[in-house]
Image 1 (cartoon, one colour):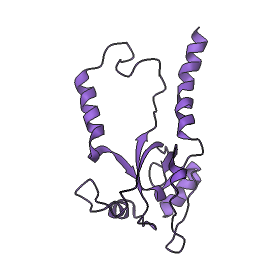
Image 2 (cartoon, rainbow, N blue to C red):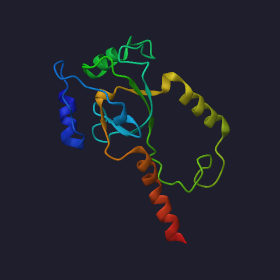
Image 3 (spheres, rainbow, N blue to C red):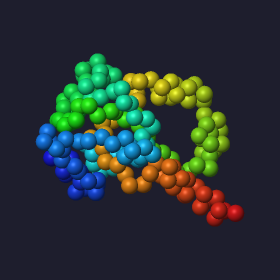
Image 4 (cartoon, rainbow, N blue to C red):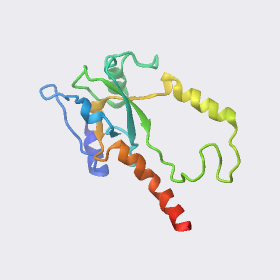
Length: 168
């Protein structure tokens, strides 16, 4: 937990201390159209994620995708030394927010306009579809960004739109 406290000072992401007496309470409406930031990793450059889905059928006690750990709770305890206070909260399926700033070039083309090989794109698609490579996060360990995901997606396009307008 002291790592989480240190992260607040460096990143500005508020840390919330939950205890067995005051456990985390999950509210579905807080995670709809949300951008979240894991509080426990990447303190210098935190990754932001869109909440794609709330898995109400999965909890921290559900089977972990990797055989290395039995449950999600065990994974967070072993890897990050974090104890969860609410073992009944649903888990979040998340997608990375785009760090790509040039939205003028289609994704299937490189910067010079040449087509990217299809085989690597197909491999990436299959990899993303695999449950082993999905990002599934525990809400208790994430901060909710104040900007909703719908607005975030539009804001990411602004540099490309402004560049295009400037070039007209």
